Length: 144
Length: 144
Length: 144
Length: 144
Image 1 (cartoon, chains in turn blue, cyan, orange, yellow):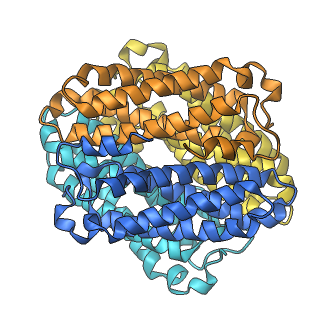
Image 2: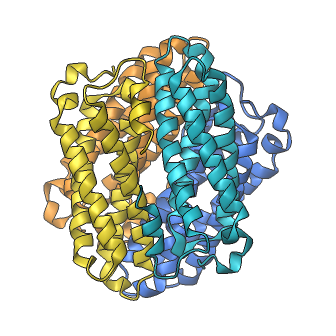
């Protein structure tokens, strides 16, 4: 159990309409930052590194976008939906691409199998958030 | 003169169609990461911190998105236009919002005046890139 | 339950002597990145923002050091103890300073109370790692 | 010419004793973040990727430590020398290790030749800062 939802609920400007979804997306992004960073490191140490080039690059891109997404989602008192919306779209796409690539190697590299699952969870969490009240009712999203 | 353009041109998969524009956007994002981080720190030390709340928050969001954008643009051998496109859009929006906010304080806080200019340069560099051959001809953009 | 320990154990160069401690430190750093980012955002929205300046600045510094520490610890196949050792020391110090500052406000700001606890957990996790086999037996730490 | 020194000098708590050195270290760290990120990406696309594994990993670690160091140095109103000192030490070590590794490949990979130079500049800038008035006279370093 993370403290993320509790933290989000302490913001004095009021809780986002979908605090649970926001916390889930933050936690999924941080898990993705972790899994992708270790997956790239493990890929680099595999005998078949030649076949893992795209996987490494996707993992690095995924880690960086997830890091930024987790940070912006963690500032609910100052959300700008016009910024977070395309950022979440970038996150959905990079996590989806990373999951696809890891899936190619999941049968022989356990780190890719775990990383694929973590990335898919992040895709789902970001999509749920994009479809939820936080972004479909931008007037209530707090911030500017 | 930064080394960014030279670095971008060394990538063995071939130079992006708009290497100069890519390098300009990377340098603009890194300058924005720097200016926004110091602007937020200076805001926090101003007597009128109460009036600077939104400026601080915008600067923090801007620094994080610019950091991720600079990192992804710096991996031209493994670009995914479907990821970089929305990321650049997020970057244009957050830099634009930060510039607008800094402009409100530019007459009495020199850090806001400089930060506004740096943010506007980044908006222009990202917009130029979005409109250029790198993204309008995605088949040549390298990557997966 | 995070996937971090499982990920660390998949690295083909062999598991660090203290995989559980490594995973605990990574998770603590990521939790700290999250809590500190939201604590700073909440501070910025409090009526007494004037009294929260140092707290905001400490939280921002803490988030950035924890982010880098989580990333380096997440690359166990390529650890350089000469780098990770001072980085963990910086992390212990910034988390300790942030916890001290948050403690001053914990009685009236719930985000500071939670953030203090999260920071102290991170201090303990990094100290345990610094004292453990991973760093006291550097020859076994993998990497270069 | 970057705006970094100008930004550092706008901080209302007063200019650090060695503002020029601080700005030089920030710019060197950002240049290193850029060069190392592109060097790792180019390495991943080289025919001899098998020989570039350590270079890629060093570049990734170097980029992350330089990013955090640039961010903390960019908050001169709230410096904690007890945090920045070990962070600069980690930065000197990781940039030095990355330069050594890139030097092994500099004769056949131009990105490694440039990256080596950028890393060595960062080592020098951080060492100069560590030896200067900002850290040898910590009482004047501002912050808490």
